[in-house]
Amino acid sequence: MSKDLTEALRRLTEEANGAAKPVESMKNRAAAGAAKSAALNNNGKPASGGGIASPLTEVSFASRTYWADKNYTSTDGLITLVLKPIKRVSLLDANGESVLIDYKSP
Amino acid sequence: MSLPVPDLADVNLLGTPYHGLWRSGAITLPNGSSKSVSVVPLNGASVLIRVPGQPAVSRTTPELAADYTAGMEWRNYALLSGGYYGGAGPLSASDSYAYVLFIDGAKIPWRLRIRRHGTWGEFLVSVCRFGLIDGSTATWSSEYQVTLTMDFWGALYNYGMPGCIAQNTAGTEFVLGNIFVNFSEFQDAMCKVSVTGTVNLAAGNLGLTITATDIEFGTRPNGTTTRHDTVVGACILTSESFYFETMSPGGPTGNLYTRTVVFTDGIKTADNGIPTGSGGAFWVLSGTSSSTSANKIKTRVITNTAKKYVWAAYVEDVLKLTWVEYSRVETYVAPAGIETISGVEYWTFSNGNLTTVSSLKSGIDSTVVVTQSQTDTATSGLDGTFRVDVAAFGADSTDGYDNTTVTTGGANTAYDIVLAGELANGSGGWYSTFLQPLPIASQRSWGNPCVVKVRRDRTGGPETWVFTTQAVVAPNANSVTTSIALASLHASWQPVLNDLRVDSTPICWF
Image 1 (spheres, rainbow over the protein chains, first blue to last red):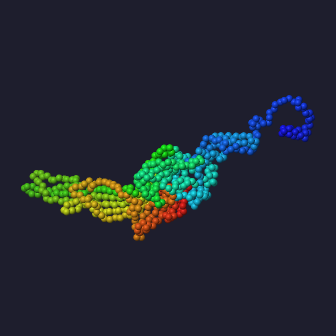
Image 2 (image 1 turned 135 degrees about the vertical axis):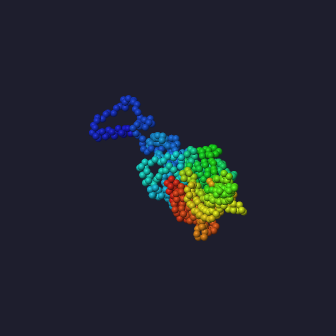
């Protein structure tokens, strides 16, 4: 449906721009040979060259993964802060598509 | 356990960067600005803590400028300020324990606490991890029974609890004092404790080796008497025999001879012998005489001292003890001469001079901070036992004699010592000047390393004591003159900057 509308808009635009073109007569549907074509839905793979729809929403806090603990010591040596550096954050885009962010190990 | 990073930021620098003198609820930062501090230090004690090998903080010039603007200063050492670490704490509690901040062999910081056990000489030690931020709560370990000293345990019996007067930078050595249950004063018992090892919570001894030695306790013998005798010079006895020469027959020839015998300190040192006749002449004894002379002087110095340790502090890792000492030095100087007693001649030392110097000193380690003394002189004879027979001298009366004897004993209290060293104040009373600790925090915490130089005047018993403050002294002997009354006196010493401050309101270096 969207493709037909797009095609229609294209034609109208070309006509408006004076791109006179003989209108093809419609083919007999039955004369058209069967042909396979790729569907718009690319089997779940992200469309190449972009296509992540904003916003990205984290799946859950619990879904985060972490690298091994890293200790941060105060300058006077008395305080040790033990933190888990983030390794992967799992998100969904506005289209419900999965997006992963992988961080380097510190 | 550990804490998840709440955002994507990394930790660049971690610590307590706000330092300066705390007063009236705020710290004055290095840039002169003021930072409110919600905690109130228990006293002015600023205890230096160092983790061994902690590197200096490296900051670029722009970073230092930014730090200064922000009032920050990043240090590689810590201060326990009135029992608090920065804004955290207090690290001690008002209970039966003494608290120490201990850095173990693995450079891990722990709170270490000690309390008295029911068995003589025994104490109980436990540890709790300090400074670990990982989402968990640190708890105290099980207690480990350790032997310290019988005398310190005895000082605590029935009356007191141990408190940490001072510790070194890693808590591997510290001094415990005795605080009475119902009072806030440290008494005259101090015990030095040494701790080594790496904490192992699974071990029965927590992985630690703990030993102790007494510094001071009530019955510690602290009196010394030294007697130093010296003799110089000699006693001379000169005996003369007179002879004339004669012939028989014929009579005196006119020749005379004198035999001279000299005894020096009872030993014959000269004798020209009897004359011998020749050519028929012979010598006849006609008379004798004797004389004595002496340049011998005996000096006897009797020194009585009593010394008491009254406080302890550390300068970095060096223990500095504050003490009071009384001494009395009697110096007898007497010449030798002849005295006839019941018809017998004796050499005697008598009619000499006696000089007495009595002094009260007070100091820190080898530095004498206070001295007050008085000198009295008198003409006095020495002990009659110096008499010797004219012909016989013992070793203790001969030229070159030098002998010292030392005896110890007596358990003088600080009270006794200060009392003994008093001088007349010219107003009908007496006074003494000495060092004493500053008032102790109401909640038992680390002791303030500073001491105060006071003058105490009295006209009678302790109820008549009047104290006049003269100065506050840091453990490195740095001092500030002040007349702030003891009841209002507060002091704090920054041990790295060597900055000593006094005030009439509570202060503490952070």
